[in-house]
Every structure is written in C-alpha cells, then in structure tokens.
Amino acid sequence: MKEYHIGIDVGGTSVKLGIVDRDCRILCRRSYGTPKGMDGSQAVDLIVSGIQSVLHACGLTSDGIASVGVGVPGTVRYGYGIVDSSPNFPKWHRFDIRRELSERLSVPVVVDNDAKMAAAGEKFAGAAVPYDNFVLVTIGTGIGGAVYANGLPVRGRDGTAGEIGHIVVEPEGMECGCGSNGCVEMYASAGAIVRYYRARSHDRSRAVTAEDVYRRAIMREPPAMYAFRQMGMYLGIALTDVVNLLNPEALIFTGKVSRAIRLFLPSVKAVVNRRAFRLPSRGIVYRKGTLGDDAAIIGAVCRARP
Ligand SMILES: [Zn+2]
Image (cartoon, rainbow, N blue to C red; front, side):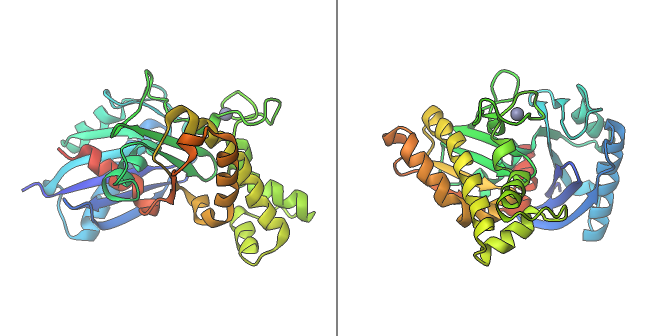
C-alpha cells in the first residue's frame, strides 16, 4: 500500500527532504548542501539519491511512496511542472523538473514555487488553517510571498503573483537583483538589518550577521533594536499596499528573520495602522508560521497528495 509522501524544499544553499505520513507528520528528514549554480540534471540526481538515503535511514522502501512534491525558488508554470527561471539557479531555464523526476521515480510529482508550497503547508497544517484570505511573507536573505484568496492560491497569468519582495518602498532606492530599484527586499531582509545596525553602531566588522544583530537586540542594545524597527517600518510600507490590495484576514511570517517577529512587528503594525485603509487594517491577525523550516516540505506533500 502506498502510505507515505515525500516533500522536498529546494533552496539556494540546501535541499531538504522529508517523509511525511497521511496526517502531515514528518517521519524522517534529511538535508543536503546544494552545489553552487547546480544545473537541472545535478538537481535531479541530488533529489533522487536524497530520497533513497532518507528512505533507507527511515527503514522504508520506494514501493510505499504515493507522491512527491517539490518546492523550488523561482517562477513555476504550475500546471506543467516547469521551472521558467530561478534566481538561485541561473542554469534552470524552462527546466521540466516534473517530467525528469517522475520518469526517474515512477510516481506522481507536483512542483511549485517554494513560498507557495510554504503557504500551502501553513494553510493545511499550520498557522493559516483558519483563514481563507491570507498572505504569507517569507523573510530571510530575500523576501518572498504567497497569496491565498477565497481559500485558493493566487498564481496570476505566469505564476509570479505574490512576489511582494519587489514592492517599491524607495523610488530612488538601492538596485535590486530583479532589475528595479528600491524594492522592499533591499530594505527589510537579513542584509538590510545588518546594514542598519552597522550604520548606527559604527561597527564595520564584516563578520556581523543578522543573527548577531538579533542576539544584540534581545540584549536591548539600542543600534540592534533600531535595525529591527527600521526593517519593520519598510516592511510595513510594503504590507500597507498588500492590505489595501487584498484585504487579507491574516499576515503570516515565515523564514529565518521571522524568529525576530516581536522585534519588528510593532513597527510593521504602526505603519500599516497609520497608512492602510482603516477597514482592512483593523482586525488583521499578524502571526508567525508554526511549521518553521518544515512548511514547504509539508506544503509540497499537501499539494502532491492525491
Ligand atoms: Zn526587486
């Protein structure tokens, strides 16, 4: 009997795999480093060998796999399982990852953008269960997002809907990897937190990370607390547009920086409450995702499950 599913979260630095049972519980997980700039066939090899070793570690065989779901960073043509492009993997161009994986594994494979998979995970088994209208905001090295409206994921014509990291918050601002400038991703991601901290603390050490700034903010070091307030202010400007556009019930924060939610959320709320239309900003639920790093794995399974 086919009794378990494999969820895979392909990231810029690692591939995470989990074996998940019918109740969305992760039975076993593994993570593997991704070679920098890996091409499509390297990715498929890594995923197939990863599945074999996670099955082995769990004492299971491939006969029991009912489905495989894969979240990837990039633009995905969902109905086709084709990755149009990925900022993390420039060699992936119209890469038919679904066909390659289903041929190698002989099971149904579903592929979607990683933030959309994480939103599916939080919707089916995490913080977004009660909401039909919510926006997931992932904050880490970059800022990603996914939108649910009336209980369904919003994709748009090309699958790019939800790219809230590229909402402009400074018209003449810093250049962004997307080709525009002043995107919120440049002003509210991990790198921005470090930049604000350095500017206030006059600490020019190259080694300081967003994690260090977080620890210093917990210790109430003023430049570190300022860095999170500043980041929250810019995030609030972008989320004001999101609230006015979509009228969500909830904003769910995930990604590494979401650990620091209590440091930046007051600034986000202050800006949204001051700037957004009163009716949609009133009563919004702001919440940290409950699935953490497992959100995309669980979402991938929820999506792929027959
Ligand atoms: Zn951008």
